[in-house]
Length: 259
Ligand code: NAD
Image 1 (cartoon, rainbow, N blue to C red):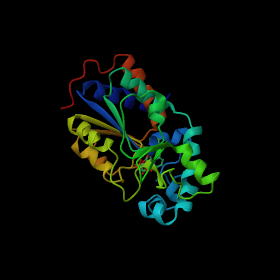
Image 2: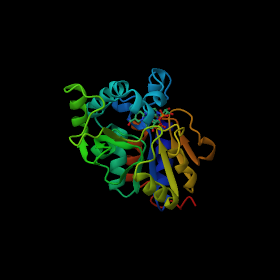
Image 3: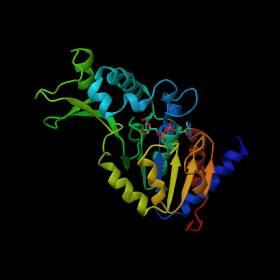
């Protein structure tokens, strides 16, 4: 085992234990080790193949729903088939130990909840359900997929005649209801640990600005690197289980608050 990784894990455990209200902000990078591509990793990121702003926008859904669903449905299948990885599991365990207060996620894959995290704020919504733009009814995402694939209905229609759309935040949408709670968490927190996000997507990337201190665990660079009091370029699924080990070993139990 790499000594650098262990020492990074101990330092992070100390910071978390020293914080009064530590929260975690995750992005697509926390799920790459589950086999789900992120946006910006060179070569494998979704941006290598498409411009998400052209496909995953409110305008794209309205003007070219077939292209939108041809992109979204395989992604949804990948989410269902994927399993939480060591990073998701470690974050759930850290919450159970009282080492973090909540996970704010930009992800729509539900893997934090499936890993056992209880307090999850999904600021970009999720792919579990869709809603009718007419009557507001909520339907499982499977229903939307069935209407598109089996009934050749694109966009999918509700029984009231309205259009069904996924409960995800698209480019051009307002933020999900959880965003307000996420801002409150960011204001309250004295340490925000960012995991697997380039911090390029607005307004989620404004959340670290509210936090008193920011720590960053991200393979690539982020827009907030210069403000970070701690940083590691390790893979989340390799480092976070070591942080759990360090916390269990009592590392940081006596640490002073980073403030
Ligand atoms: P991003 O692609 O802009 O950045 C991801 C970052 O994670 C990169 O900087 C990369 O270096 C880093 N990374 C990749 N693998 C890592 C690992 N194993 N450990 C640590 N770091 C790793 O993603 P973003 O900042 O979340 O913004 C993209 C937007 O796309 C978000 O809004 C997100 O909702 C959405 N998205 C979500 C999913 C998902 O739900 N899984 C997948 C793709 C995109």
